[in-house]
Amino acid sequence: MSRFLIFGLILATCSIAFASDPSPLQDFCVADPKSPVLVNGLVCKDPKLVQADDFLFRGLNIMGNTTNAVGSNVTAVNVAQLPGLNTLGISMVRIDFAPMGINAPHTHPRATEILTVIEGRFLVGFVTSNPENRLISKVLEEGDVFVFPQGLIHFQQNIGHGNAIAIAALSSQNPGVITIADAVFGSNPDIAGDILAKAFQVDINVVYQIQSKF
Image 1 (spheres, rainbow, N blue to C red):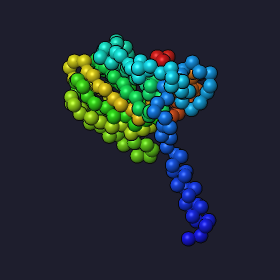
Image 2: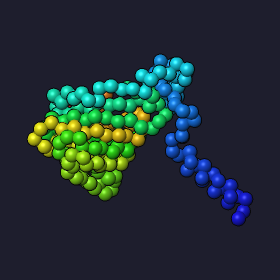
Image 3: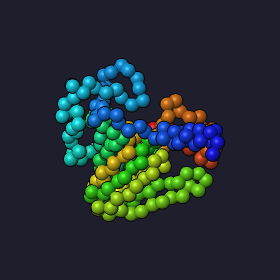
Image 4: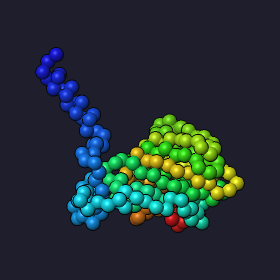
């Protein structure tokens, strides 16, 4: 095997290795949100100043307010609420649903989501990428677990007769969320109406009407 081929294989291996998040290089890296230093993530607090409370979040037992247009509420526990999650590549949410409430179609650009039904009955699903755009959907009962692959549009709907609760874990300390309707029709500034009219194949006045709701 030539030296050039060996060198190429080494480069390819290194590229694959660097394509994923690096492993932590210390026991923990509690986020210091007051630091003026900008990095990809959050700067570590001095380990000597770290306390047990940096690893603690309280309140996930409290029901969120679902009195809103979509009938759901997401209580997030990511690095913004729990500094000890910094560099650990994990977070979680509690999702509360009113009857027929939805967690509207959205994506997590930086995380896969694994959801567990705690109470109620759900219709969930995700859509595969272009050009197939296949809907993969399932009805979930209490105790069921469902996975939403990273970056794919997905949703949940409470199809039971009472309130419902789900808990989800996400594979990032800061998974991000892009709610499709908010991003498309509620951007700041607005996406031009003629662009959306052509994209959705509707009259431009329909676009303006929808944008007025966001």
